[in-house]
Length: 578
Image (tube, rainbow, N blue to C red; front, side, top):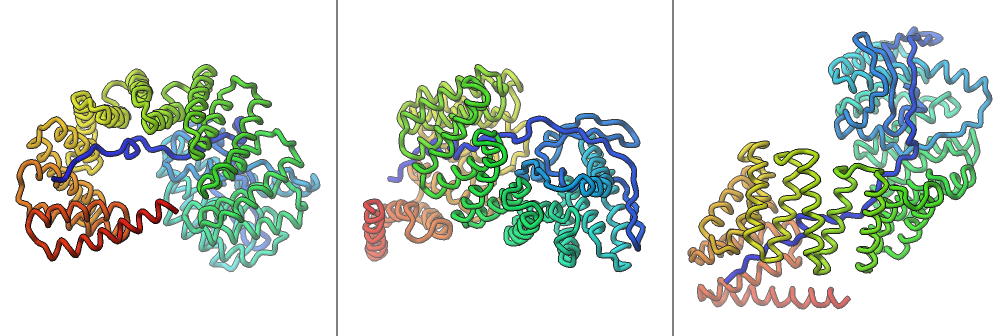
């Protein structure tokens, strides 16, 4: 008879490489906007407010701007924009130290003021919740610059305005229009000489936007041209090279070109060390990127050096009790975990939690603290110390209840994690209580057919099975199957998971073996499509199919499946030995 086991805790408490986000410029900058018109030698271009192309990509830039309705001072856009706009705060920028004359800088500033003005105004409108006004502002500017483009104007002014409009639509979250703006920008910058003022900043923005759209090949082209331009102007050791180097490295790593990506990150590190010393916090970003790439490549031993260096930089700059030191310890713990040194990893995680708590660097209910607890809880479960892991999961729940209330949707994750933990400890009554609570909260916040509700529902079905409440388990499993088939399709992986669970439940209820075999064949087709014909999942399902073929006395079918199963077992053993 097929058996039903609770899912692995890893399916609920996912451990991923912890890459803490270390701000390069913790002090926000304030920019005052002025009303100006750009004058093209041939065309008059009126800007309806416009950003400084060289500063538009500061992480979590704060703005001071006055709209017609109200003044918005120090509005932190990082908390108000849609997820897609986080790209503006993650463009991996380090301040360039320009090696230009004051006259050149003054000319650039005169040109960039109205650009800064528009972008600041767009961000102010968005932060104040006036998204439609921001869109109207961008549309008006686009119509103005389009008139100039249609009249044959193809200068740096038009390119700069298109750049700002594209950034504005990125902030609004309209990727379709961002893509359209980038097509026009491509045409505009292709005809410009590399000596044009602020072209390097426009190219870097374009590289960032192409990366945000997942067009990494185009992104790399823009970054490479920007690097060539900046290097010719300021030399091979200019810190102005750092931003495009980081952007190019990110695009390379996103396309799987890891070795070259690490090389570009290392080039950025070398430049920063020469200009700012070997213990500057600006090194954290490229060092952590290299470390994470090495972990991803299975080179956990090599990854230890960059994360250890980050730890030493933070200790030197801020002292051993600073919260950033705790975050660095957490990253190092992840490296030790990847190396298989679980005891050392657990010790580092505990030390990290203690430092971050004691420093007050982040609030107890902050997502960073929550992730640290969950990562450590999962590791403790993996090594068989579930009671200790469960204490951390309970702490997550208590903190969330205290700060967000007992029916807040964020509690669902913690309740499900606790339910899974109790299931593995065979405390099924407690598991049932946690999962019922999670379902109760979800039903108040989402629709009854929302597919996300099927996750705790299927977990609860497993729990009922283990409590020998098979009819209730079957009812829930059938409901999960119905919702998932409608949401994902009948041949989807979530449906396969529900079918597999249903087979085990109905088998114990005495369901017809032919029907159960049909369900398992559906599971097999899904797994073959999703995991491949030789996957471990397929091998497990084939074993169940052999069991039912034997019960049904289907000798020929059974022999055929057994031969395939035997071949898969041999290959699997060889892979394990290798």
